[in-house]
Length: 417
Ligand SMILES: N=CN[C@@H](CCC(=O)O)C(=O)O
Ligand SMILES: [Zn+2]
Image 1 (cartoon, rainbow, N blue to C red):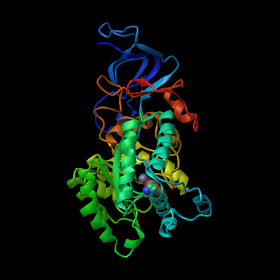
Image 2: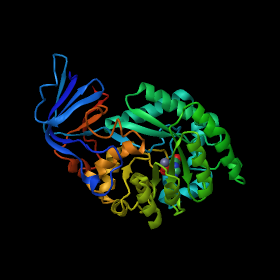
Image 3: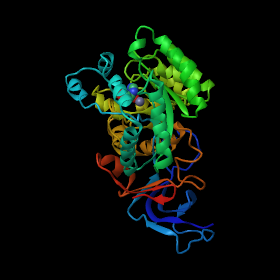
């Protein structure tokens, strides 16, 4: 077996090795740490992970690239499994309102918030959206993110705009080193013209949009903003079940602000993830644990919305719910691409340990995107997506917060920076 790339003398090699399934409870602390580790890669795949030097069956030659990992911490490529990557415009105009205490759902009700980004996304051409999202991806990869989920949802009833967003994501996936997984989220807000009859819009999503998205293979997942004043539990169930019928795996924005029962619904219909969950009930948490629905937590959103309320990560972990963590990058409720900052919030505010945090943004993030067979841990046969952090240990990444600790990213076996 020949190695095209070897990362050697790694002071802290965090492999996350283990079963390819969502990690829960104490398993979230088991990060497969190897001191003085070594990783060998052939092309875009890992061929060896171990301690010390390479075994004799791994050949090297003059073309093999060597990277020194002394005093570094190496992890699998980070996975940001909840973003609204492709959108037009920005919403810093909402800051003054937020500082005055106007709530997120009230801004939305008045035709701002998501509706204002719907307008900007409609006005932006394909190239403009592409370049803007590309810039965000460049930032994300510089922070160690090698796989990103991207939702539509700023076209809502304008299906051409929904398709434009997913086409941009598709082209970026082809051209940019970061892997992008698409989610159809036409059910992101009730369009003004359906204000009196939201069920009519639900029917359009179910009867027209979902079959077309599936036919054109534009998305892997289907998502709904299940929230007071947005989509009800019944409407969400209807949309997600229609999605599943057409091969789109269900995800749900659940109990972000009001405890509507989104967590319970996620368990009932076996969503792969329920996201946000700030207001999730005890019963919802219990049911998610039973069904092993991943809680995709987004503490950057709580921080930015200034509600002072964060998802109950500790109770979820103790109940046996698998946790992933994401930025929720979007222009309104969480305008940041920085997943390392989210990792610090998860620990400093939601009291997750550094081990639980790294599990949440690697193997559990991979599970949140159903990519666990190829990503999320450093093991033979998996994709050679790795991050070299210029830090003496894992705790340092979390503790020394707000700056970028990445020294190099390796994507598909290629050293990016
Ligand atoms: N809550 C709904 N959707 C996004 C926000 C989108 C926006 O405000 O533009 C979220 O996950 O936070
Ligand atoms: Zn979201």
